[in-house]
Length: 189
Image (cartoon, rainbow, N blue to C red; front, side):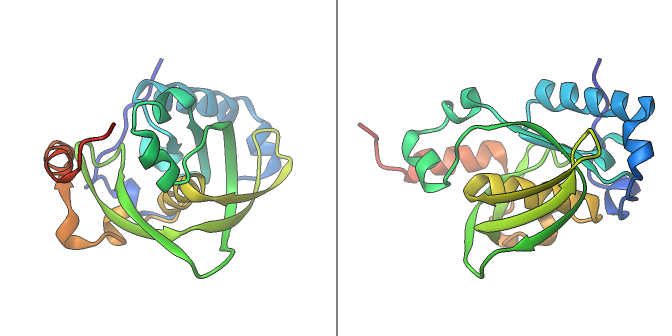
C-alpha cells in the first residue's frame, strides 16, 4: 500500500512538524506509518520522504538512495554531486548542523512539487542528531548528495520547501530542464 503525497499548496507542507516521544516512536501506529512511508518513497520513486508529505505533521523522514537510481545518471554527474548509495534508514526529531561554510549548487526536485525543479545551494557537509525507528540516538555525518537529501527532508519537517531556497530564475519543469541540459552538454564518450 502507498500513501498519497501532498502537493505544494497543501497547508501541511508549510507547518512545522511535531517531535515524537520514544513511546510514540515504538507504538504500532508510528511503526506502521514508517513502513508505509518507505513503500511510498520507493514507489514514487524518491530518495527521501518526510511525514508531512503524506499528511502526518510529525518529525519523521525516510531516506534511501539506491545504486539503481545513481546508475541512471552519467557517472561524471554522480561524481560531481558526490552521490553514492545510501542505505534505507529513518530519522526522527532531527537536529541539523552544517559542518562548514562550503556549499554546492545543484538542480533539485521534490515529490511534493511533481514535475518541477530548480538550482538550490546547500551545505556540502552536515551533522544530524536524531533518533532511529527504534527510538535509539543516532548521529549522522554526511557529505555530498546525502547531505543534500538530509537537508531537503529536514526542511520539510520545518515547514520549508526547496522553492524557498532556490535560485528563482532556474525554476523549470523537469522536461524543460532535461531538454536544455541535453542541448548544452557535450557528447559523452
